[in-house]
Image 1 (spheres, rainbow, N blue to C red):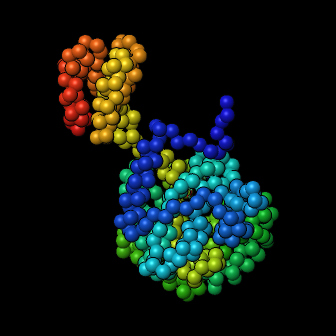
Image 2: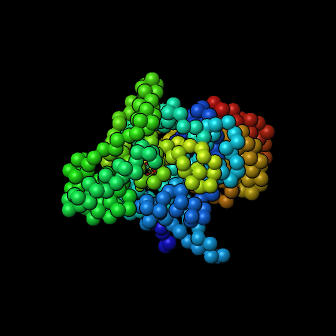
Image 3: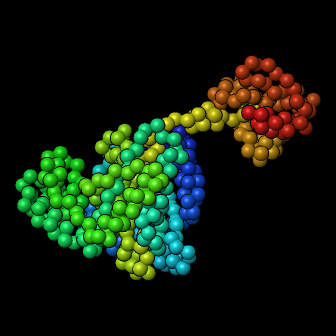
Length: 420
Ligand code: ATP
Ligand code: MG
């Protein structure tokens, strides 16, 4: 038997209903905030991600699915959506639209990570990006939108919103140097990964989950924002407060992608254990220009759908029972089948779910199947019924039967379907 690739999972019918709910909620909430959908390819030229995500990041260094196509071009399955979305924004001149240009997208992402609970090699994200405006009210609005999406899902568990400012090209470089110096000085008390990251991606070291590194990291110097960044961050927090959105400032919140400046944020759910981040995002002013576009600022986030689905409470309409067919049509013989084929088609055209036998089995085994399907009604048409121009309608619960003329059967089933 050929099995699915490690870290890649199927979404079975028993779970697909929840996925549909998450996607429908996303569309509803995002569109109310003025976001329009954009659909993007799942692979791009490798250099887009190398430039857009950053050569020094874990993603680019060791997590990308990169391959050569038959013409020898290096392509990569997208590990995230922002770079692709910005590529499309630039390529199609979307920046001529009134700003901010608000876009959302959803779909699979690919990262060669160590598979574990809540961490896959193919996973799915919802992405929101607002491009062309750097007002702090937009940062607050984007965070509020993220919170409202989760509200729309009626989760039973509380979620924490953490925010931070990573500064910008003015205040971060000096901090970076100070941090490197501090980390080098304390390298003996850091894990190998942290020591390695100190040189490659020092801010990311602060994010290490290893408990033995915590004392050094907790005592690390904090970023001192330049006046502009400090004002921006204060405004974001003020606007959030005005909207009643609670967000905890967290110095240690650094994100895995190089391009973030100023506002970053993350949503976590304690219930998820080690892989507790359900969404994260931030501002990336300068990235569009870096990718060859206009000097437009931008801000956005990504939500991990697998982790959201894990948090979703069961709901009545998730259960397969509620999607059971209304009726099982049982023709006994080919002549009866030919009468019931158009009936089934007409009933289904009104979005009423019915199933149809093919006339080759005995009535008893077909009734057993009706039971297994859990239908409310069985419709039986044998030779006797055909000769009378009738069908037998059997109530599967009570076992009582009535006859309906074949001419009225379609309308009868549609009416029963509507009454359900
Ligand atoms: P983490 O810290 O969990 O590795 P990240 O910072 O790499 O997350 P982002 O790149 O910001 O995550 O992606 C946003 C969201 O996508 C995460 O908050 C998470 O919910 C989800 N996500 C990221 N990587 C995976 C994965 N390998 N499997 C499942 N979901 C993922
Ligand atoms: Mg990650």
